Image (cartoon, rainbow, N blue to C red; front, side, top):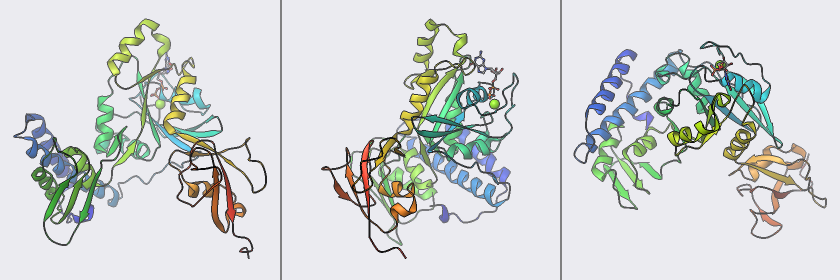
Length: 381
Ligand SMILES: Nc1nc2c(ncn2[C@@H]2O[C@H](COP(=O)(O)OP(=O)(O)O)[C@@H](O)[C@H]2O)c(=O)[nH]1
Ligand SMILES: [Mg+2]
């Protein structure tokens, strides 16, 4: 609904002040049935103001002007407070040269390293520490956040002496990053007239239809249908209306484990539950095997064996893809002479209904599938 906002000419500072004021109002308002509609609308107002702020930051030239070149099969962003050992971890895990020193804010740029794991190349990005206020542009916050937004996985790293990570999450949340969540099952269809109608396919307990309409109004949506296919919260509806959200998985590591005894670990795990904790020592290279496995698991790599027609499959060098990838994604990774004039593919393995099933470009593949690409003969010029 971003196009729906008129361009109001409020100065940037005023937007910031207004966000702070509304956040304060939400904090002061007790949450109950009587206030839930009001709070929903306040949250929607904040979301709209943040969209406006993003738009300004981009158009005003004060934007990012900055990007990290993605390479490898997937990109992992290392996110943590300053001095938790992110740079040390990158260096020891990947061999990349990153500055690690015994003082804060040593990482001035984002440094990439490459980790190879069972044939998959995983790019790991070391970043300046995330600090409160990053999402509104404090420190190098904008950069950190834009890199995190574009990554396939976030690896949160905490220092064993500073186990708080709520505020890291909050900072990413404010920037539209949703961690370990799936997109809400809400469908919004704008229309020309007829007002806003809200339908639900399940019983709603967190927000009623009138409250949903109130939120839509804040996004200047005056006509259209909102279909809630789950018991959605106001926050989830706001996410769908705001439209710039990204959904990224994350894992959590606690560093400097060389300085803690085995008996000190369980209480730390309990404290951070239900998030699973991986104990590592970046410096002593402890816990690296489990960490690498957790990264690879979270990235959900699948291995595809390509079988040229009439030949055995190439089992030595699978093509590495991700869960959910299709034949189309596979084609992009093969040399053009193997895919030119693509007609169909034959699939053996878990994704096939029967061995050698003929499928099209949209067919989702599974780990260890064997695939033959069938091309039209004589189409080459
Ligand atoms: N004891 C111990 N110290 C560590 C470990 N990892 C990093 N450090 C130290 O913590 C300090 C900050 O590390 P650095 O990698 O620069 O942190 P960053 O700001 O998160 O990149 C440095 O003095 C490191 O030597 C570890 O696993 N164990
Ligand atoms: Mg660093």
